[in-house]
Amino acid sequence: MYPMNPVDAVALPSHIEQSPLPRLKITEIFLSLQGEADSIGWPTVFVRLTGCPLRCTYCDTSYAFHGGQWRDIDDIVAEVLGYGVGHVCVTGGEPLAQKRCLALLGKLCDAGLSVSLETSGALDVSAVDPRVSRVIDIKTPDSGEVARNREANLALLTAHDQLKFVICSRADFEWARQRVLEQKLHQRTMVFFSPSKDQVSARELADWIVADRLPVRFQLQLHKLLWNDEPGR
Ligand code: SF4
Image (cartoon, rainbow, N blue to C red):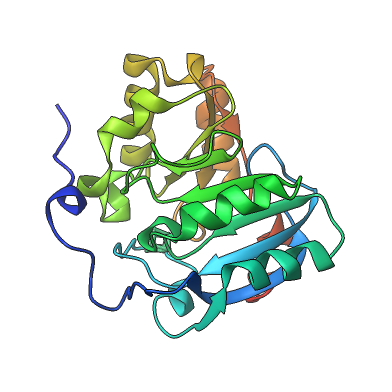
């Protein structure tokens, strides 16, 4: 019914290097407020890993596609703990494009932190530490990356995870609504819909959800309202 995922079949792009050492390529680590999904509003440390094999039309973190600095995983954990808050979000880019992201997630959990992972939904999430809340995108047709959705991930969803649709148009909304209702996604995990900035107004999307009594949670990205999407906020 839905397209195969080409990421399963091909090697990752060469710009996403893998290190033989226990380290990861990091774009930035910073303290802010969690701007979306179930942990919204909590002071949170963000660890942004470098690299992404996707190119969504609305991407606001293209600065994380390249560059970055190699960091030892234990140093990353120590820096996160140094901020003195209980929540950490591992994001990107696509953090799972670096295989050692899994080790980082486990160590952050071992350190007693509440850990979330923001992932594109294109890569396998089965090996992610079960203590982590996986925030998985479902890419809509107007994202330009609908063919990358890894359908096998949906079978792994628990109530501890979250699904996120970024809606770019009325057609996207109808596509997403059909997916939620047909697959009963809302009965398996938390489902969030948010408007793509400058493509669908927040009010329009809110009205569509209410009119259809759709069993999903509307969200606006808090960090964009507060800080207008500045890197590092
Ligand atoms: S998956 Fe995320 S980081 Fe990658 S292109 Fe899409 S929006 Fe940007």
